[in-house]
Length: 140
Image (cartoon, rainbow, N blue to C red):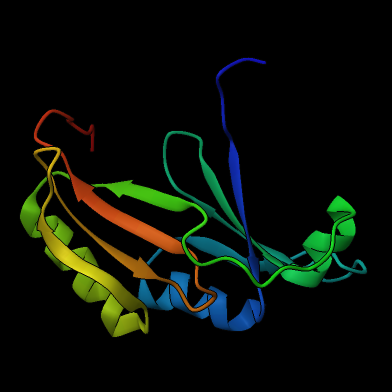
């Protein structure tokens, strides 16, 4: 296997609600819901830069597609890291998430590893970390 990840798919309970959170609340670009002409095909895609795509897929549809049972255990099993260029940007994204309806799990603060980050849960409980690391630089 080559070291490459292209799509991160999040199982969601209400696709419209999750679309509104990420598109309207967080400002992520999307063409909206596509594929709804197919049974279990409705999905929303967000291009996250560097060829990474965030997909929102109804939990029942994902479970059918993958051949697994639907699970509600989403909180804290995995965190999605969003890296920014400054402490101030961490604070701004955390405030934006809170305004959009996210639940702040751990407010932004200095971390033991030398950076600054905070955590929030999206409307479906997926855990996001917004982080600044003084050793990482981002091309804008």
